[in-house]
Image (cartoon, rainbow, N blue to C red; front, side, top):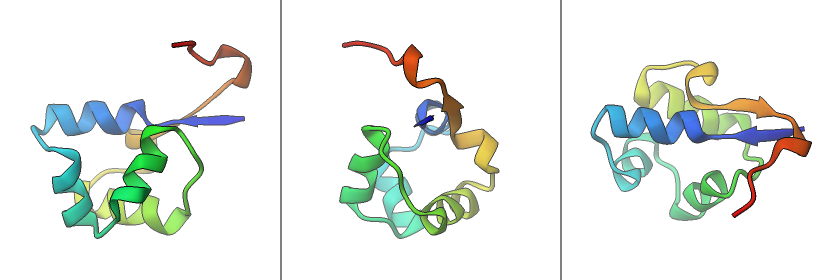
Length: 73
């Protein structure tokens, strides 16, 4: 099971926000943003802070994807 945060990045674009704005508003580090960008697991606490900062739900910022369907770069 893998997590994709593409919805989060789309939401930021839709709201005309930069990643650093989110980091400040949600009080998360650039390291955590990097982990999100790579699709790594992060704590529920961080997800809650992001959702509070963006007034959204988990479903708005992440989705579970099948590990066999990973995009190759």
